Length: 158
Image 1: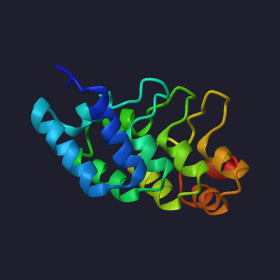
Image 2: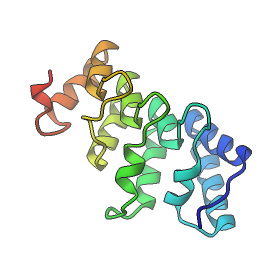
Image 3: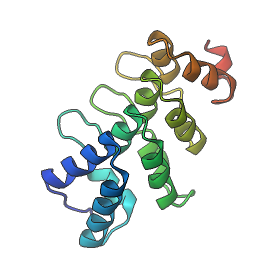
Image 4: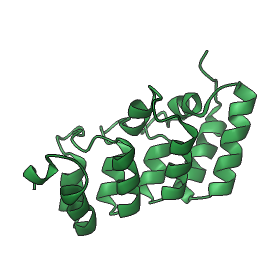
């Protein structure tokens, strides 16, 4: 059974991820997992803002909090069937956490997400992928890294 989070529970997780308050984030996440008797991926699947569709990974990525992203990824087994879903979750505008990290130029977050399996080819609601978002926002380091290291075939997009 899916966990039931209150709006305050969700708001707290999203706020801590956005603000980079790692200790508070980890504590809140652990407490919710314990209270709901479920795994981290189950909490992350339901901890989504009802209006924007942004989840915890969106907020951590948008603000460059690689420590929170890494923590979340280490709590999930690499073969977890929910990992690709979480990494590539789309908000109401179709943006993934990678779109947010790329357009804000957070290279470390881009690297962590892509290396964990985030799909750089996903297009948002207006047809832009993460590399395009980085490019139009003058995030040269993110563009260069994704073209060079980010995935096979990306160099053909530049």
